[in-house]
Image (cartoon, rainbow, N blue to C red; front, side):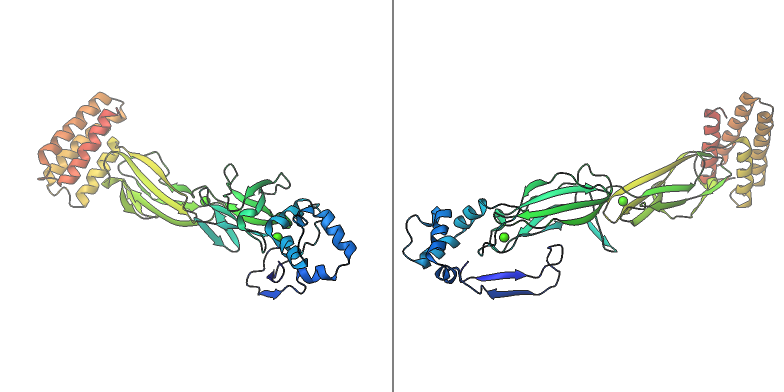
Length: 368
Ligand SMILES: [Ca+2]
Ligand SMILES: [Ca+2]
């Protein structure tokens, strides 16, 4: 407007403000009233013929005319009639608006790449040196991957952009702000959408079922994939208790039945998932015999008569198993259970006896 400062911001080749660039403010070199005074009568007559709104009521002088021509409604009326492809250089509105995208949280920036999640707010922000923010609109186009082209959608300044339905990976948001007079050059904000938690791959335990004399371990890798924001955290539990990657799983110390390794991993956007690995521990007549010998060597069966009695039952059960005489095998395992019930806490450690009782009962119940 005449007499008011015009603001000229340093801009890059794309039309976007250069981050950190100095902004210079200077007075318009020629106020509109001076420009009007410099025109001949014919030019002024042309102006009033093209802009009849400036002539009603008749302006008292050129100062009134200049003031009237500089009010917002008047500039709007003038610009509405412009060819938007080649707008004229209206001195009241010399610059197009400048738009950008405000990226909320969760957000993760790494190596110049901005990762966002499904819930990350993306908000249009546009400013102009003549028009108010609510008088600016922004044309928006979202492209996934290497897609090009597509239609723009005109949105209100301050509106949110949704990436719903876009696949994970690179997403490009094309922006073009426009006010009543000027249109910004299209520019692009590059994002990477990450809505997927890291993937857990178990290498151990590898089997669905282990005998009670076997060993395994907890071994896994976690990856967020080539386009993911990266693994931010990971933790593992075994049967609900804290565990570690690489930890040995010694079935001798585990109860019969199902056991669960659970790895919880989150990426840098906060996508998190827990991946379970479930396996069963089940005795065989042979593994029970090995378990008993190991318990003896560990000092858990201090009474040698008790050890020999238990061992006789298991040797008999193994022989029946080898002959395919399973009902006889189960009877001998039943005798083993009764011996344990009679000696638990006496001739054999209580916890070990209870675990062996569970092994034998599970074996009988499963018909193994
Ligand atoms: Ca403008
Ligand atoms: Ca991810």
